[in-house]
Structure formats: structure tokens, C-alpha cells
Image (cartoon, one colour):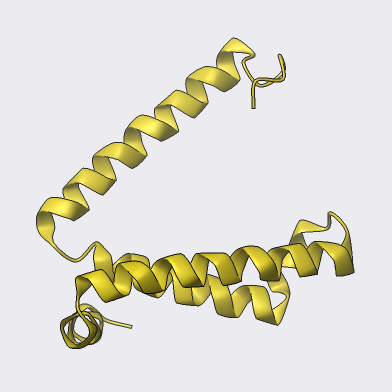
Length: 102
């Protein structure tokens, strides 16, 4: 999967269509994960290795990569991800999650 292929797909279907497709694929991923949990319990390795989960994860990743192709959006996403990662690290350090504030 390279940027050229992702751009061709995005150009063909259009940004709004791919946003709607992302919502559909995220819903399918959630359903696949729930079914895998019912099959494997809380075994994360088995859940993530389950073929339907892998397939839906791949679909979501493809769409996320397509939608993040513009430089401005990629920068905004990177900045937001850094903020949220730092916030989680701060919360871990402060005991936030141990206080059941998940």
C-alpha cells in the first residue's frame, strides 16, 4: 500500500464517501471484536489474530491513511496524537486510571 494507490482510491470515491465508508468499517470492526471476545474471552492475542478482526482493522487503517493524505491534516493528526499520548502518560503517572476514571 503506497501513497499513490491510496490517492487513486481517494480521488475515485471522494473524501466524503470515504468518511462515510470509515464509519461503516469502524462499525464492522467493533462487531468483529465483540464476536472475537465471545469466542476467545479476554485473550488479546487471539482477538487480534482472528481473521475477521484483522480484515476489518486493515480496512480501517486503509481509510485512515487515505483521509490523512493532505499535509495539513497529517500535521494536525500528528499534533493531536502527541497531545493525547502525553495526556495518557500524565494520567498514568498521576494515578488517574487507578482512581477508576477511565
